[in-house]
Image 1 (cartoon, rainbow, N blue to C red):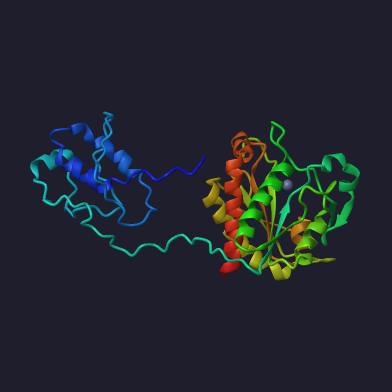
Image 2: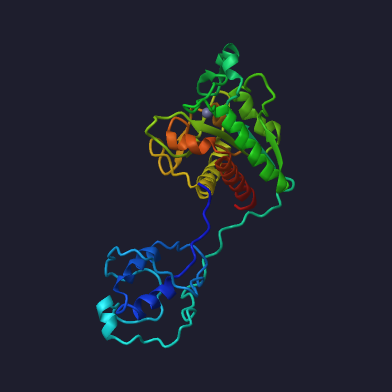
Length: 337
Ligand code: ZN
């Protein structure tokens, strides 16, 4: 769950080790497996290692050479371990930094700029822990432009009884703390301080009421137990009755892509495999999107009815990662175009 530290890089050194000692230690080829598993997103050139580590396992490894990464040195045909015995190693030098990166480094992943001073974010924690005690109030129908819908719903929960409303409020508070530390003004549609609701039309209006630049509604899904993953819901264009969200469709789409990517990066949560496509959905039946006049999306952070997702969503450390992903997406939205 927690982000693990990168493995010590050892690709070039291992290549040398495999070439140099192939005759003596024919079992060393098992080390290729570890080589091939290296993360290739790290800084180019960070491949030097002073101590080749060869796993002691005797699992026969395929004779194929590793591909896709510049090797040192540029030997012509990749030798098999037997061929290496007959071919003198052409590199006298043991300097593992002989091969600089052939291409410029990729631009580093944008580290979110800290200054959101003057910007306002609306966070909407889905549902309310107390809604179940106020069914009459939350079942009242409200106008969402193209339909009428319940004022609010109770939301879902895990098998162990951890409710969606608890989850959404906790993650929203965590995201608020991150964004506030970056200078943003953060407004929540509720902060565990209301007996029920608010209704979805009030949640939608809250963005405009707060003069927010952007809004995210936080949810956990109640999908089939066999399905897992997260997805982001973007507004379809709805111009009907009191709804006219035409102006927010495009910016909300940009927000949706950022949120999909940043949430995935922060949590390792896969895209939903039971709904949406590539982690993205577009809907016209959500009052919170139909009636919003500021760019807004929903995120279903996982499927609380799925045991794997439930375990994650119940874990405070994972919720912090979820909040980080949401805060980073909002920060990126506000600082890029
Ligand atoms: Zn929900």
